[in-house]
Image (cartoon, rainbow, N blue to C red; front, side, top):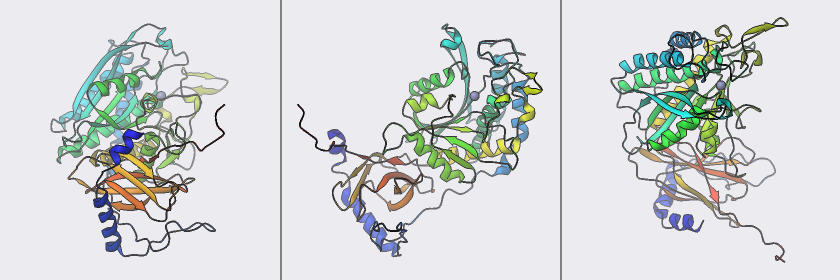
Length: 471
Ligand SMILES: [Zn+2]
């Protein structure tokens, strides 16, 4: 902690304050602070309204989604019979190798239209788990990489991922049929469609600032083996993970009244007043796509289930999971059969392309905006305990494309951030008349193009209150 405090000391405090003051003068508008009834107003009335840059123009339109190609890719994957990771990697007609071939072929087609920017990589490795009988088995992940155009951000990676392996009822049986249309050919199709949308857009422009990785991985059903390997691969390649979107079971919306919102699962981390990067990524996604598209679920994953975001989340990285609104367990992890009149199996006929297309659009738009954004600030700290004013400080590298920072706050019971203040320079913002204790605080970077980084919540030095002397 002492390290962190000394780093923050000496930041451009005066520049930050000057910006704060000039902004207040420039805005000159009454701040419509909505004080909850029967609580004192914080800050006191008269705070100017915040200037807010509009979000980046040219959002990806729903009509741009190529549902037909998503359908074709899913059909090719299902036609492989099974894509259990323990099945054949070399048989072109049946097994997981057939699935890999379908994805590589589609990505190679997409890469042709990217002006040479999209790079397709097959990553071969070995891994082991209880679900490989403790023996090392061969695995492959398929990546398409769209390199970032800004040297300061090209080593920051935004990832979208789905798994292309599937499973029958018995996760060790490489022979049984395992169509895996929804789990997770749907997620693989979303990742590949994002590659098409963003590489196409990038071919016509100067490109995105950060690098985007469109991943399809194997080994999920054998114990998250492909994504666990991906965490290491990304590190070995020298990348920092800016955000990881796991799409798993995103293809069906069988209940009447749809299209419904996709669920977005995020873990809260281990500190009770400072959410994990995963939670901040989830909030950023909801802001980008809107509350009509995203249903935030403040939980790491569904009970009793796992997903490829988990190894990233455990590593402290911003990683979340998209999953359809309500799952039908007859259609997941089931060997195809009819039993007591009920049909089991993960078939294409249960998929809902209008819904899946929405999920693809929402993923692509999030990747687009985050890859255009400045780097998030660092060393976000809260000071001012036992004083009338909260003091929020942060650091950031120089960035000519950045307009400034938004200081965010929320009621401790409010799931979402609100903008308290816009500040041009890194340093310290004094929130006059705002208690450190009644709200949570965070900071995020704002680009001149309107793209926001994910928020970085402030940390407060923790001191245990005095207690009885130790015996
Ligand atoms: Zn899955």
